[in-house]
Length: 67
Image (cartoon, rainbow, N blue to C red; front, side, top):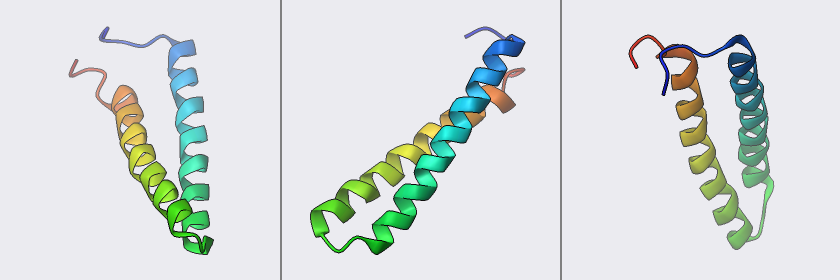
């Protein structure tokens, strides 16, 4: 990965990060409301995966100089 992101790349990563945060919020909320155990498991899996993706996207924005 390059050391610096272009302005449009930074904006794209920020837009994806915002979308993933919205998806994570919805999955957390719906997992508490779901009554079906299989659906709860799917949503909890999505929460775990979404959290990892958000952390990776945040690294693109905060750790650019270290790369």
